[in-house]
Structures are given as structure tokens and as C-alpha cells.
Image (tube, rainbow, N blue to C red; front, side, top):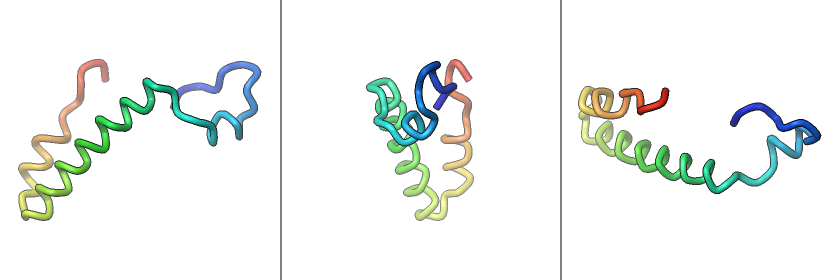
Length: 59
């Protein structure tokens, strides 16, 4: 989420709309969550952990 910009009300910042960049990050994250959950439902927890617990570039 990042630090609140100066001049923003904290509640407005936290409860406000997502930026285009934040929406893209959420879209990628939800895609990964979907894949991980499907693997776990197939009883492939180890595969899910190995595939989705990797750090992405920039972390």
C-alpha cells in the first residue's frame, strides 16, 4: 500500500480507490492465488509452495 501521501486523510487514503498500478499488482496476485489454490485442491501442496513461494523480481 505504501506510505500515505502528505495532505491525504488517512481514512480516505486507506479506503480510497486503487491506482492503475495497484490494480495491475492485484490482478497478478489474484491470478497466482487462483493457481495456488487449484494445486492445493488437487492435493499438490508441495508443488504449489514451490511454484508460488518464490520471491518476484524487486522484492
